[in-house]
Amino acid sequence: MTDREDMTLTSAGYYVSQEAPIRTDNPVATPQSTPPDILRCAYMELVVSDLAASRQFYVDVLGLYVTEEDDEAIYLRSTEEFIHHNLVLRLGPIAAVAAFSYRVRGAEDLDRAVEFYTELGCDVRRDPDGFVKGVGDSVRVVDPLGFPIEFFHQSDHVERMSWRYDLHIPGELVRLDHFNQVTPDVPRAVKFMQDLGFRVTEDIQDDEGTVYAAWMRRKPTVHDTAMTGGDGPRMHHVCFATHEKHNILAICDKLGALRRSDAIERGPGRHGVSNAFYLYLRDPDGHRVEVYTQDYYTGDPDNPVITWDVHDNQRRDWWGNPVVPSWYTDASLVLDLDGTPQPVVARTDSSEMAVTIGADGFSYTRADEGEKKLGHQL
Ligand SMILES: [Fe+2]
Image 1 (cartoon, rainbow, N blue to C red):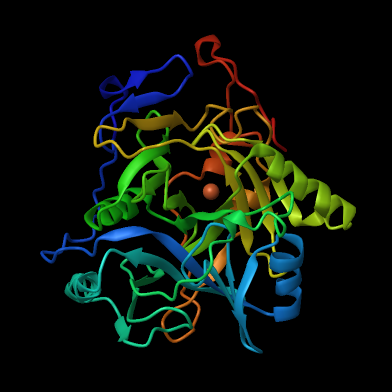
Image 2: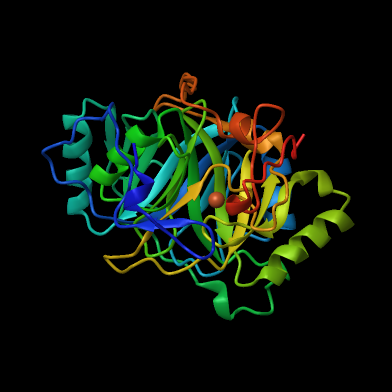
């Protein structure tokens, strides 16, 4: 539980403190083994039910570049990427996530990953030829939180498309930015990810210390992944970055022109958390994709941790616009290493939707006025 007296209230309405003000009474044991040195989130492997429909969404509408494809899978990358792919779409019987994949610094980090997760008693598998095309020696695990995680270092290099302005579209997706995972016990997840070397940049709590979500990074941005409180393990979204806000507006205009505005779930808008401009889309299988731009640098060792009050109506949308209920409730299943969906465990801590939406919830715009915005969102 966090004492707000340990935090400093800023003029913008959020709190700052040093290092994560999150404690767990249900920790995953800290391994003795050294964790792998993770560079960044690198790609997601998504199982989809109709490869042609997914190709139309990710390639024809969103403009991701096809590195390689066959009848079973499509390998896609963003504009600035030089490794083989940022997204693998694989045809399969159940729409779900097969892997959240991180790139590690060197080959020795794959040995470290094997030792680290073996010590935790996890299912650990290694394929020296890689589990997918374009990457070499890889380790896949089901982590203690129930998520399928991959680590790799070697990847085929492909052309970085940044200079190919002749191919760019108004809504150009330039980088993979982050994953977002749904997990029932956020403090437990945060402690485990800290043991793996991640650092918290922002979180959402109430004044009793219940943690509703936390953002965690390896690369020096707001996050490589976020832990969102809810029934899990599930995948909340995968996020690509654009250079500018207008690129996100162009995606909305294009979806409208294609009569595909029903793919827009939430936004566009400005986040409180991360300060980024955002848009949430749903792909043909319902997998959620965020498009996001202009968060901030977090690489200094004393980067302040930001804590938002769950009742601050500007935490998830800086303009105070409603969060649609599906955004809180819907998420994608995740698979074990044999392709079976992981069982979903219910969250027992308070639900962010319940405490902020509807007759039982409240949120405020100005905390000092004690204003309660009852039933604002339904
Ligand atoms: Fe996100």
